[in-house]
Image 1 (cartoon, rainbow, N blue to C red):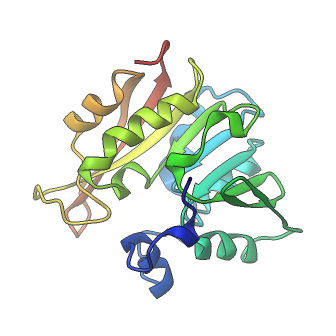
Image 2: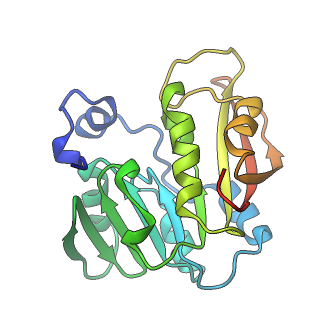
Length: 220
């Protein structure tokens, strides 16, 4: 049986962060790298964009404003509830298998475990955006994430990945330190990769790298 947010223990670190309001990773505005680099990907107008582990990211509203329907997947119900409460427009709610779903305009949120979301749940997915999904996962889970993401996307699907490194190599997190070498190892079997931008480290010693990806085929 698939898990939903309500099936997870209260001690789950991600759920605890939302319950306690410890969401410093949430940005109060659209990520500048999304605005800068998304147009260069050549994603077809009207393509449906998958946003894994989406939180209540305002990046989803930006994508929707550019004409892309968005499907976000998020474990924490608080994130989904806050997203629609802070937005404008009517909200429809429904349940599909083990997911509680929220729709507000062109943005659809599925509340549940990303690893239990399958492509047969939707007609199609055409692109993806990962700002804080891969870096939210511990090392043992990242390979599973990379393969599952590839399973959900057709060959030719394009996406933007924003990764994070620390100047000191430490596994403290989330967000976790994920090196360029690890990203290439995880993603290169099923995606072509291009580094679009390496940003200077901030005052916490955190450095972002922006990647453009294209799904290869067949699945490896």
